[in-house]
Image (cartoon, rainbow, N blue to C red; front, side, top):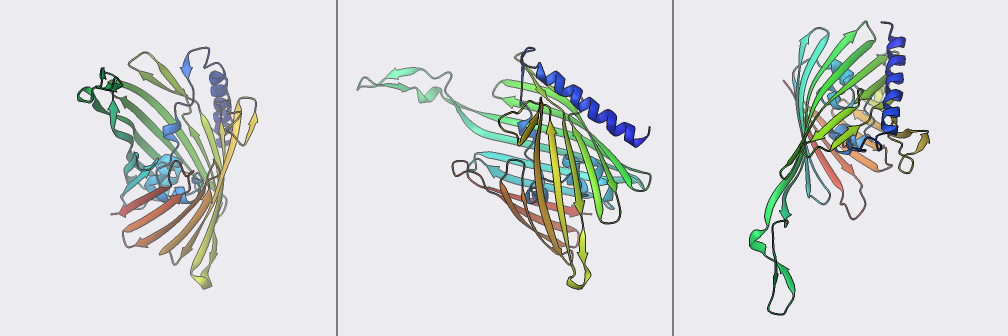
Length: 331
């Protein structure tokens, strides 16, 4: 199929998903269920505002645009950890990718977002103290965990000379005390080199509309979203340096009238932008504005077979700032 018709079909499919979400309330589906899937997984990408759809970032691109894995020459292992919400939320990412043949990459990844040791007072009885005040029976208070998992199988394929495509199959598991939910989602990504320095990318996330079903009978829908991005690499050989600015537009079919940058009917629009400076492919400095207009800063260090990345995200004072550390090992 001609690539232009493929892109047109994907955009029409996204808009059709938007119509589904328009009536989600009538079908008793909970909207905005996929927010835990929007946090990002890479310290490098986070420092650049999450604008990573048009970057070839190795195995971590499986989250942002699976087509971006195609530059992997060797097996990669990536790990990321961060604590958010004043260290009450632990967020971890683990991935590995291998080159299957000259034109194909296969990767597996796991994301966990968890809050542990939550106090559960549902079974605690109220008791009367000697002063006549009400209190809880602390001996009947237990702990439980809340965890979200995303298991992903990813593939990237070189297509013709300047095109690459990629796809994700995601299994989603959510646990909250004795309750649980399951879901399956699909992502599809494209990248095209205009020349050696300009790269364009598109990612269609949850392209078939992801359904998450709880054992209570409640169901949640994650609507499709479209990410369009571009990057340009400016190399300055005399400085042993390069600058890579990136921009990205995010289109969602969730009728986000109050929180989005702009709206057109049920389709909302947000944007992100960032820049990466590289010195001798050894030291990296990064900054960016993410889709909710937060400032992000970061640094990276590349040594043989290992890259270490750090990202800082400025949150409101009540939520605490986020410090994200990532490790990429090239075997």
